[in-house]
Amino acid sequence: MRLTTCVQQFLDQYHFRIKGSSQRTIKAYREALALFLPFAAKFYSIKIGSLSIDHLSLQLILAFLDHLQSDRSNAANTRNQRLAVIKSLAKMIRLMYPQKREIADIILAIPQKKIVAFLYIEEIFAVYDAVDLKKPLGFRDYTIVHLLVDSGARASEVAMLNLDYFNPTQKTLTILGKGDKFRLIKLAPKTTDLLKRYITQYRPDPKPIYQPRLFINKHGRALTRKGIYLMCQKHLSIALQPKRLKMIHPVHSFRHACAMNMLASGKSVSDVKNHLGHENVESTMIYLKMDLRTKRAVQKKFLEYNQATLKHDPKIDELIDWQHKKETLAWLDSL
Image (tube, rainbow, N blue to C red; front, side, top):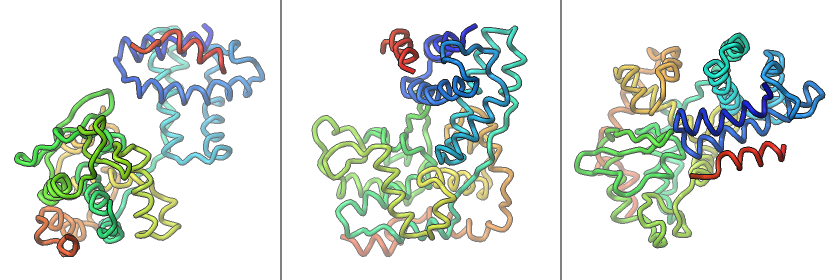
């Protein structure tokens, strides 16, 4: 079985028809494979079209992962994402080609690199203080940072928020996550108050096409995932030392902090899983390996802060059917 044929089935049949993955997910998987297939061909000194399922060896995949980090300077998080794509391909091989199960099992046994880089509570407070509320978009940034810590939402999820996803009366927020699945989360009083004030007083006037979006940039367009990334990076660079910045992801570190705060406050692993929108509990279990006992005193201070309303915040008071098969074949031909 040619590997290119297998990849075509992976994108067009397995993920689109069987799993019902979103176009965004399929695009991300295709981008990862666009790196992997040429590397595999070079590794074996053959053409991409000559690759077969049998070429998916442990040595190849480990060499590819090392290449990502050493030659492409990818972070461990990116390395894990690329490995997740290859593992997903292995799951399809195990399902559709049971005679190749041994190859799939070897791939699925490759461990991900453990990284739980989260912000400590004092660092989160430092980020809050780093936001200049007197700047035109300062209140928006201040609100987003609080929302990231409270909700644990991904940057892409925050960018996709609409005004009607927020219910100020119920203090809830609907989030559109991976696989186009919605989840409803409860917000802390402070986050709720910040969102209400942002919407009524500080939200920029959007262009008509972006009217439904919650967060708007200075040009009147919807704030993008990249915009949220750069915004977080800017405030983190003010709050933290350069050495510390290299250890964390500008947005995902807030997500990890949210999980740690929930566990410290006594929430169950299932609660954290549902809050973060993890597909399986294994993704959540990694947080249990962190030592929480030494952080409980600081966590208590943070929880008290997050439960407060804006009137107790002095800083605020200072401010007044795509073409799947054809497209996939064209993409494979271009490699």
